[in-house]
Image (tube, helix red, strand yellow):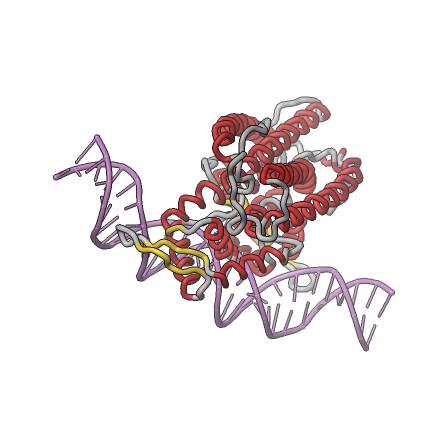
Length: 204
Length: 204
DNA sequence: TAGCACATGTAATATGTTACATGATTGA
DNA sequence: TCAATCATGTAACATATTACATGTGCTA
């Protein structure tokens, strides 16, 4: 059902065509909040129109249909927003990959974490440029999707980067404790000597 | 396909039954990485066994089947981990809700953000306790899911909290600029004087 | 006048959800 | 012996993915 509300949310902000909504999804929602593809969006728009939650308010050139949210649609969106569930489903393939990295063994996991940290640095830098440019013209709408998403990235990305860097550090620390011998497959197969896992506080 | 690899990943760590895997999902993956339900896990396990990527290595009391990853399964998991796509799908209903909050209007959006900030504080505190307790016994495995997930939460949660707090601040700032008059529905319905919104580029 | 961006759709398949079904073992 | 937890499954339905189909309007 989330896709449905995502579309209602975008239309609450401004009437738009399926094509425009697809783009706004890509810009604002796809990355951190909700992924949807072109054809799924079109199908859901038709269903929403059938249900009277949105309506076609203009037809344009290439069969273009501009949709606007109806009063009922607006009401349904607000009702949904107001009753927040305690837990919600999360699916993030990227995070899954990071969590499973250990399966590659220490050395390779470390490598990948390093690559991840680096690429995240780059994305943060890009985002910062984008936000600097945006700020001048968009400051008037602090809740606009573009602003929200960009600001979110600016908080989220460094957090994940730090997490990955921490994980790397913990790997290194463990390697030292183990005596610093090289490893090719990391876990299951190797020495496994858990003799001296003593101190070294994580300092949380 | 992600579910498939999530299961392979968990089994790479340690052989387990469907029941145990369901629990490990809840503990380690459900919250930040990949959500899956009980019956989906069982179905996928059967498929994985059919495909020879995992195998039953023991049968227990109540029809319990302990699965272990096979060599082919291990190889497939590593292959998947090694070719990281540039982008991956993200679905997070919680984030979606935060992004759409504006539809409730400033006042209510502010309220919800405040509630969110508060509840996040609480969860961070809980997590910290949990990590402190865990540290002593689990430090030897820095890539264990429990550690990874907990540490991730400790980075991620404060970031989202700060983002939400920032959004609140920006709302307040805007209210001041507008002359500080009360608003009940914020955007669409109220004043609507678009006199003072500047250029407002769409931004990427 | 070719190529690109605009613009919407259908069909087959895969994945995920909801609801239900079944029964064994353990411990109070 | 009763309730809780362990343990696995099926079926109907909803949602999402992949691949394809179709054509318009703009502009270089």
